[in-house]
Image 1 (tube, helix red, strand yellow):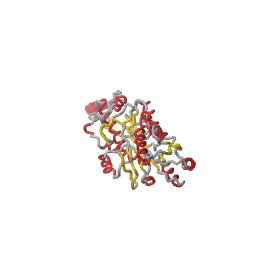
Image 2 (spheres, one colour):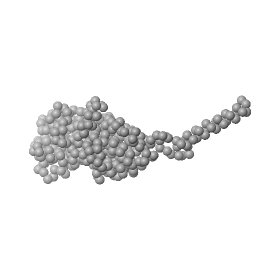
Image 3 (tube, rainbow, N blue to C red):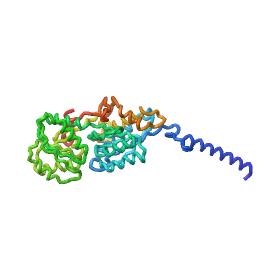
Image 4 (cartoon, rainbow, N blue to C red):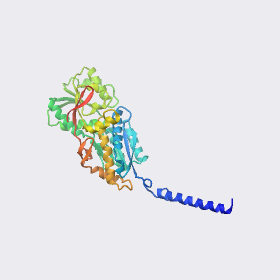
Length: 380
């Protein structure tokens, strides 16, 4: 190799090295410079979602996941300041796993916001999100305690709304003696029963007995024997699946022909024929356009609570877009402030919805009945 050749190769090497350094500097890969996203691209906001994708209520969790992904697919991405990434985790509707998934989403995935599902998991996610300063919305919690703290919210029909309508329907039907079956380790069950007890104080409706059972119990003959001769004209089952179905079957086996009802939990079951002809109170109905869109996309109707997932994703995106400048991802405090000030939100559950000072988005309950194995709204 000649001296001239060596010099030319050296010059070329210096030029290439300088180009690499320039590229690294611009991308934040050198000298500790931090830039969100690459040149010419939008910063990415990461939203973590923990849902029961396996287990006894997996059909509800999967429907919620579908709705969140549907909302994501409907985003007008060309006109947004940010790109959005969804990270899903399966908690099986178990609080211990929910704590693990929430910690993983925050510590490993570095999410900018969290979505959780249901009161049991929501109550363990809330303190984790609060400590980390990560905005968190639960889209399926009856228990208002899930919204405790600065960073926690619930987008679901409050237990107080369910109870108010349930009392009204009992009075309309002349039902005045009831027995409760509740789940003592499910805060959503307890919240619904407590809301009912508050709402029934000035009426002639009597709660003859409240049997609180432990999740995982399969033999309820003792509890049933305690209440079967009390003269109740309605049994109210605030139970999740499979306890819901098991109690119903064992009541019938014990010869109890008294009707059963619930605030919300019938639709936890995939055995709706067990409740044929029974009325109950449920969370707010989804708008027809959402039902049609979901059905067209997935080939089946959405389960209850799915519309809440759709709206929750959009609430977070709307809040991020308002909080940020499009250059860097807004801080948790900035996103949180926007979530807390949501007013006049139009979504799958209706128009003009707002976040209350109690961190709850209040939507109205409805009365439904199981007809031919299908839930049908009979009183809006």
